Image 1: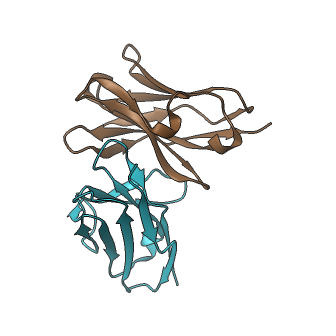
Image 2: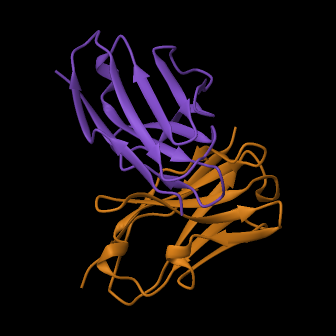
Length: 119
Length: 107
């Protein structure tokens, strides 16, 4: 059974960056494909990007290109999502989730991390 | 990106009743459509995949149909525990997109 435990809620100023962590247990990161999805009242659920094992690289949604970076630390089995140049529109709950490689379906989800952007 | 249009945005029905939610894709996604249930403060939970296949452990009161660009989720014999927001999601490619959600209330 996979468990994903995310870092806690944060408040950020406009223009700042935020880095959310997602610690994996039950499997190793190399066995999983981790993706990030955010949810806001204004825009609903938005896929931000994730690891495509077919090409061995991370793919990003067009809306976040240039502003988001997803990384992994296999020594601590932790995935990270960093989002820069924050605005109030980035206020949302951010989720990490595993994707089943064979089906491209979301499988396990983290508990979510609330990021609030406010001056 | 493929746009997903879901309707209605809210729905109210009685216990024991049946409801249908519709999801339209801006282009053909064949059968690569999933339905999720989300309760407040929780992550989405997979109900249906490949348009009609029931995820393990999901009651058979939930059913999905459709293909190409038009899909439906039907919930029969409504229970109080079905109060939630339901989302469709296309996974035809890795540029996943979701519908705007349908909030289900029980009268």
